[in-house]
Image (tube, rainbow over the protein chains, first blue to last red):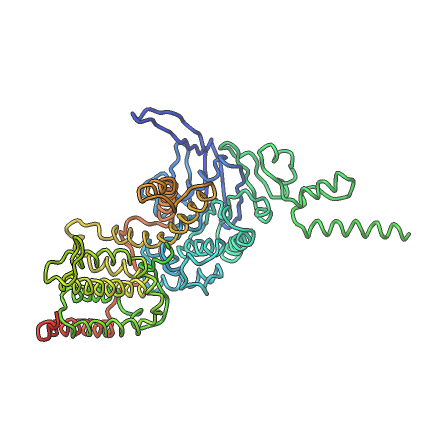
Length: 292
Length: 270
């Protein structure tokens, strides 16, 4: 049984005019079924307005389903009394690093979550130290968040969530406002948490390069899950991804072009090293062909 | 100009003053301000000055850093001094046209300038040596009795600490919007006062919109981290009085008594 299960999940944003009459209904999630196993690294892709952020906010009980059901662990998120336990089980990292840091000193911000859930003082200190170490920001514990780079701020935000010891962390486009270096830092941290701590990670993004190491990729479009599978399966379907206005990693595009040009390269190449090996192999074959 | 405001900024250092309980610092600042407004005579002024210098010295915050905070209130000080200078009745020393400067006026103006300067310095020592979180913790704990009569003490403290956290961010944002507008021909520097204020409107509208958006984001992030208004909350840095805090209380009270003694026995020359 998975840690996050959605059955026929529907969410509608209802806009009302001043008299309270319904003006328009926008379906952000349209009968979504989802099952995430504990310890998995899941990536959700989709262009703007595909409903991926709405889905993320449901997992954290920030939004409640209009129809259908969503379970986190063994809790139904639509029940009022489950809201806090759900948020303890599934933490969330948001897009803008500035707008999610509450305190003016790094360690106090990391302590904010544990304070809220009533962790005793000594335990808070232990957790703050541990989670800052986990994200590699222990040296900055006394700094002001304003003086950190975007990637560092985002790692502090991650530490703030890790300190609450959730089983699952939802990253809602954590790299959208960062430079390439910051992006790498954040994604590396997410993977480390997944591998070393067994935290279930749900990464929402539209940078294709960030998802090649995921266990499973889910592609969303207009509120529906339209594709699901391993990165290799997903990125083999270049044409289909284009339909959903998504890109393919540059390396995959290059491999595709090379294959079309007649080289012996399989579909779904994801990483630079992988492509390099194929090219070296082909070069070797050609060389030995010349010799004989 | 906006970056010079040091009030509400924390200056990390390892000093006795930094280590004091925030409640001690809040109380001492209040006592110090009261003493500034009721001292009389040069002796008390000397005592207040010496006390301030000792505290600044032991806080290990560079004096230059504090003076930067003074710059922001120079105008306010000038206005107060001018009003005092011209509008205090008494023995006229100099007079021209409708203005006249009285002996008392000159004295009041000088005294007011000194008082305001000391006040800002004293208050900025508190904010420079106390993290905003500690400060609000201190306020929260000191004001806790008020929550019994329905004052939302925790919410007020949380609001203050968030406001302090976002001051530098909003200043940076103002700067950015200003530059963006200037790049498109907006003029913030010429014209009379009314025109300048009017020219600020295209600056304020986007600033407010962005501040609301940030507030929305932050509220969501806080909720996501299980914040529910302070019920069942524990503290990472709970406040305990220690030996040095008690000694600090005694020193501050001693100082106040000394100022009072000076006021009563040596109220010269004012």
